Image 1 (cartoon, helix red, strand yellow):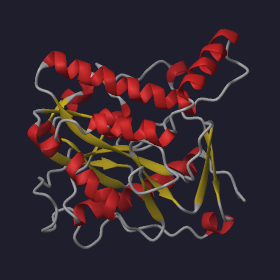
Image 2 (cartoon, one colour; image 1 turned 120 degrees about the vertical axis):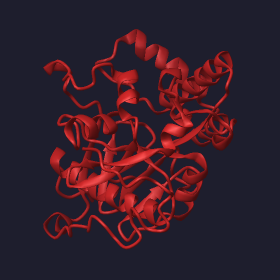
Image 3 (cartoon, helix red, strand yellow; image 1 turned 180 degrees about the vertical axis):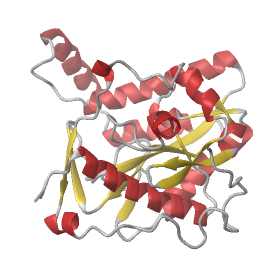
Image 4 (cartoon, helix red, strand yellow; image 1 turned 120 degrees about the horizontal axis):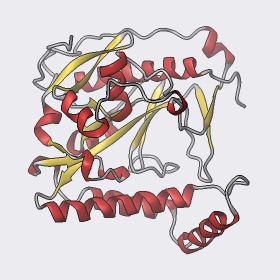
Amino acid sequence: MAGTPLTVEDIKKEELNIMKSVHRFCADNGIRYVLIAGTLLGAARHKGFIPWDDDIDIAIPRPDYDRFIATYRDDRYIAKSMEHSDDYVFTFCKVTDTKTELIENKTHRSKLGVNVDVFPLDGIPADKEAAERHARRAVLWRDLIMLKQMKFRKGRSLKKNGILALSKATLAPISYRRLTELAIKHARKYPYDASGLVGNLSWGVGAPDFVDRIQISDRILAPFEDAEFYIPRNYDKILRDRYGDYMQFPPVEQRVTHHGFTAYYLDDKNREDRQERPETAPGGPGSRNDPGVSEERRQ
């Protein structure tokens, strides 16, 4: 049974501890990762979380991602993925805290705690039109999975709930797992290491978010709260391409989180006796296993 609810600050603290564990494991095992999306924006603009946001997203090249989901180990956290977890139906991995419970507003509930999202990066075809078609199909798979997960809601119009009901009836013969398998199969079509452009196709990211593969390999450490995590060296171009003047704050009314979940400590003692994890460990950044990345810190 769930215990004490986590505050937003509790959630951020637990996510940060998960990310420290992920960082240590990746550095020790030569696995490349970078912060992406709003987490990258938070690192660049706030040197940590965006104040009104409450999640951490990272991306790992598919070859390294496959190793990560198969081998990640921690006493408290587990890496859940469709490939290695029977009750899990997302196209990407979540590293989840076993001492917390997450209740999400979805019809299918994988057993999760507070977590960090880990997205695989896959290759994109070189031809522009082929790349756009590939991206549109990835978005379609994402939308079908989201439709399958979506709940009926009183606040939604009768027309929208009717369309949702029809969509769910059409998708009923296809299991969550089968949809996920088909989406992953599509995402993996073009090998990462043989592609010039790469992107987060497993969750249907479109062409504007494709990046040069070299940009992912050329990384630097950047401050994030009381730790340092990897970001692409040319983070400024990536963020400007996606957000424009990303250093400009959005209007106050847009400074809200979009996640619909509630988190609880499974045992209240976890809140009282939570042990802080060390920021570094033997074999971390700069060790012989770290995959040849500059130790330069972003000022």
